Image (cartoon, rainbow, N blue to C red; front, top):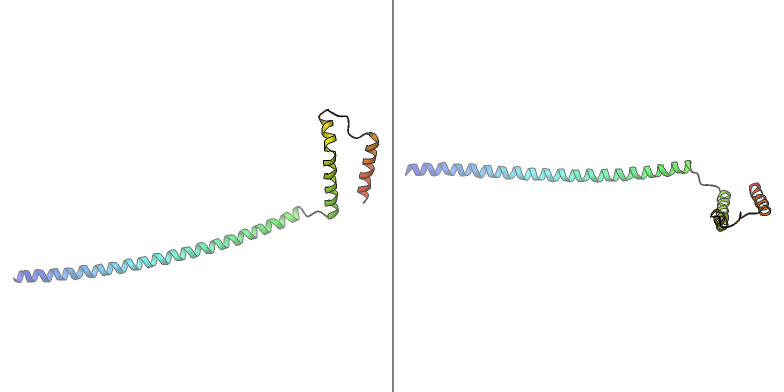
Length: 128
């Protein structure tokens, strides 16, 4: 009987050790889980901060690019824009005549008289 009693006491102590170890392991798991959640939150915050920083840098780069473009290719004066617009309108007006000439279907589109008038018109424009 005493051997059963001794065995029961030994088993009871072993049970307490196992339960104690289980509680300790559960606490460690909870701590580790909490640490992981904290680390994930920290990483998420760092990623959001990096995203905002990168977005800001991208905007700064785009602004610098626009500034450099403006310096390299300044906006032309209104007179130049007007002249360019009229030039292209004239080109489009004369394309059909020149197209036929270049295809060999029509004579030279500007005769000597019209050519002199065109030259005078260009000279007048340049003087303005």
